[in-house]
Image 1 (cartoon, helix red, strand yellow):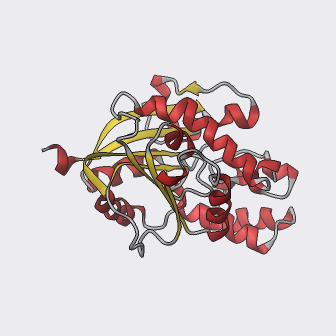
Image 2 (spheres, helix red, strand yellow; image 1 turned 180 degrees about the vertical axis):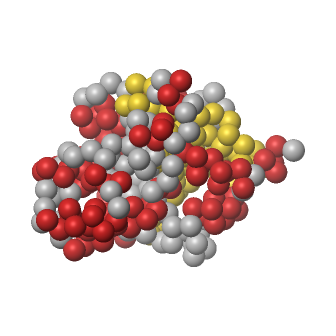
Length: 264
């Protein structure tokens, strides 16, 4: 397990840098990021992705299952000059009574953890204002570290690419042999059950009548710059256009989508 997975403030700061340098510039062609923008982040953790928006005066709301992460986030933002414009909620998005509608919804490295993604993408429309946008970024399941094995305690497994795509019984056996805890194994198997490919994600968008306004594939994930010192690299167009095979080399896909119903 890398230090960043234990040091939550470090993880928070990594999110801040990537959103500031890459996510907001990706959005700005279609989204005016200023004090008039309302933002909802689903699966916000401590809210690192929200900070650059808050810095620019946006009204931001974050929701996450994990109460401890939300409490951390409230501490991190306690002295922020725009603290009156942020709301962090520890609750299930399906049960929330505290959300309204927003100009922008963001989900970075979240959709690949959600069960029944088709149902979710249909449900989340209720929180989108007319002409609002949704930003999503996720690692395709088959990429070298699509199984999130970097969280493994074993130093070998934490840097071993592609073994997460082994058949489930073999994958589970490898995790046991290398001494991973039952809780860790259970968590990694859950990630395996919800992992998503580019093709399946785009089918879900089509089924739920979303329009893809902008897309960008990365061979080297922008987040790897702050994590590992690697300069982001976009996917090679000819490779990014090959269904299925592209999932093995694309480490992150960025999407900006809107509800087709609002664009008619």
